[in-house]
Amino acid sequence: GECEVCIINAALLYGFEYLGNSDRLVITPLTDRCYRTLMGAFHLNYGGAPEGPAGTGKTESTKDLAKAVAVQCVVFNCSDGLDCRSMGKFFKGLASSGAWCCFDEFNRINLEVLSVISQQVQTIQYAIRDNKTLFVFEETEIRLVPTCAVNITMNPGYAGRSDLPDNLKALFRPCAMMVPEYALIGEIVLYSYGFEDAKNLARKAMGSLKLGSEQ
Image (cartoon, rainbow, N blue to C red; front, side, top):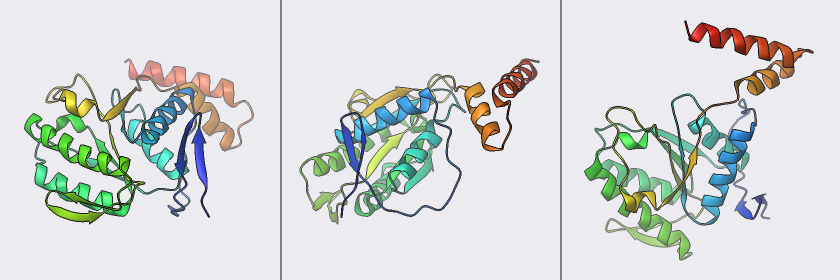
């Protein structure tokens, strides 16, 4: 039997992968918008690209959506030492396992490598679009499990980051994640621990922490 997960007009097949009983994210309007963008991207066989400063929940939102649709999500921290051969091996495993991946700080990879990666991602996306079960990737014929998806996160404006080439940008749907809703997250977490006046407590805690961070 099959089970579909739907958001608006986007639908994905439920993966039935048991990923353990781990903590879940608090759903705020920001994470909800991220989910809608990612689901819409996967529905059209694109990847998702949340971008914004560190600590806004880009990677965690991607992982949490993967958990919601019961698909394994592998997080990979990118650096400028990555080459296209190691990325090719990663993509081969991804396509034949049907898992999602999230390349963290994707724009730290060198520009020459990024242009090769765009060809690799495009090959996988075209194979999914053509409903293939086998496809040729870098001269090797591999099995394709169509639930696989490539996601990237970016921290724009930091030193040592390169702008993505246009042909690579076209393969992903961007989602800006700038400021998390700390008060709402604090409120829900406090309610989950059994505090009655969580709304006021969260507001006061957030005010104190904000003042502390500005010292």
